[in-house]
Amino acid sequence: MIADEPEFISLQHILVMQFEQQDEGPEGPMVVKHWRQDWRYQDRELHVYAGNNRWEHRALTAEEARGKWSQAVFQVDDSPRYEAIGAWRHEGGVSSWLSDETWRPLPRREFSVRDDYQVLVGSNRHTITPDGWVHEEDNLKVALDDNGDYAGEQAVLAREAGLNRYQLIDDHDWSAGDAYWERTAPFWAQVRAAWDAIYNRHSEFELRRSAAGQSLFMTLFELADAHTANGFVSAAARRDIDSALQRFLVTVDAG
Figure 1 (cartoon, rainbow, N blue to C red):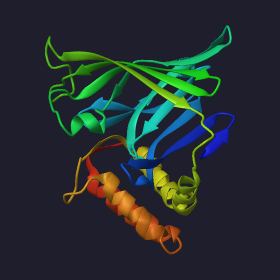
Figure 2: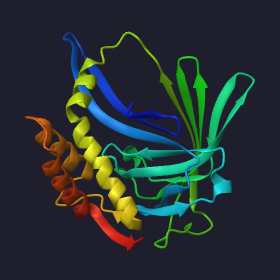
Figure 3: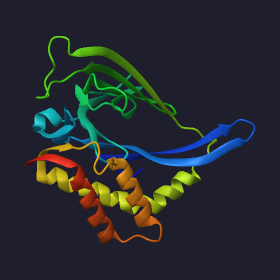
Figure 4: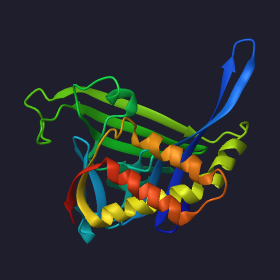
């Protein structure tokens, strides 16, 4: 939990994994900083995915945002993934949030092996359960042209239904994840601040998938380890973070 305020909630997902080795017992733990989700009440400033690795600022009217919460989802390196607004409904003992239509980039498991479509178009529903929540996805896999529009009458390749379950468990040792976050949280706070500065400066931007032969997430993960191995100096980390992010920004439309 990064933030828990009346009108803003930020959740950082961290994986703590162990691997069973045949005849050798468990191996690990392996810790991975994973995705992040931010929830904001009556949010009027969204940063939405527009296809072809491009994000745009979208302003909402007070009426469009009234009584609703936005969910912004970020990649493991805190770069944007998608953002949408929707309403919570609390009826008959069930609490559920449904987004408006959302464009999303391909997940890593897809874009690393295929290039026949460029965007997921769909909606997300989150339903609270007694011990967690369930996330349902209803997506179309859509091919785009160079202008970011549907690529002809056969642009939709497939419909995808997703179901993700998040459940509280009490028999797992999370201490390795807690230790990682305690050490690196100041660095990732600077990463989030650097992204906020980009959002404030630019109404539209694109991101390279790699720079100097390396992905953004590997670049920032290496910086996180380097800057937190023996203490942390905020100003030095921010300089390196800003420099790294600039190498991945491609087309920037001044806002």
